[in-house]
Image 1 (cartoon, rainbow, N blue to C red):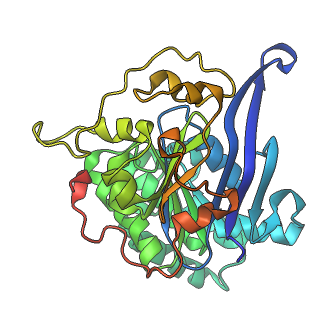
Image 2: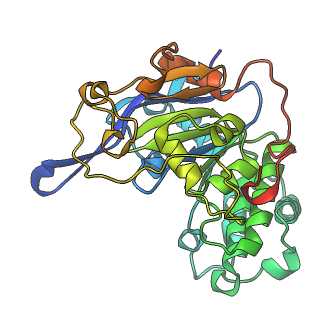
Length: 355
């Protein structure tokens, strides 16, 4: 079965310095498959510098991999014809972290909404275009009479972000790639934007890739999660398993670091603290070895593969070396187990990461 959007053994290396002699590997041999059988919400999580934004830009097709392939409907982005590229641009839409940078300050916000409708010939008339814009604004909780005709600086950060969500909805995409969509708005508006993301998935059948460093919001809206560490997948699987029972020491650290409203109650259970050490990891070793309380000699000799611990949870750690090794092309099966019915992502969960 062909994945909707897929990374196959993708590596991205950035060069810097004189003559490009200095290099930084942002992603290292990462495979990720987003299935086409049913819409889902997948979180890509990790600390700053883990490779989240590089992965987002690769999925959007705005940068090319150093090695590996990025495919949409089984077609490599680099081999797409003009019509195929146009279809990809409409069906895979971004939501940016800082919405203000997307706007032209000399135009009212109407411009950013009308342009994609006209470019992709989505409306048959001006009246049809107007109706589509009004419907999209109402879908994200904005009142058109308080939004249209205003300039970007006249809107709050939350309003600007929701206008960008509405813009994505106008194109009727199949996939939305959201890069830290609530990181620059205050807490009172996060719930509204997260609710818009849930609606896109549940009511419109759109798959959402949610890039974040915030496990709390990821737990609220997502079904699956991929945890990145220094450009590699540390752990992946269903959000319930990974958050409630993290296997990789790095994921345990992330869960343990979430602030608790009740200091006596630990959301992630008793998780050993991981003290940061010097980043002097041997090239072929586990990238987390210098920070890991469970490090073994074998961790310095080679990097662990992804071990399939359960049907819907994998971790790159030698603690689970007795488990079967996951084949790279099977990552999609872990993130979207076959035969499971689609249910609201927040079914049975409390807000703000309480479990």
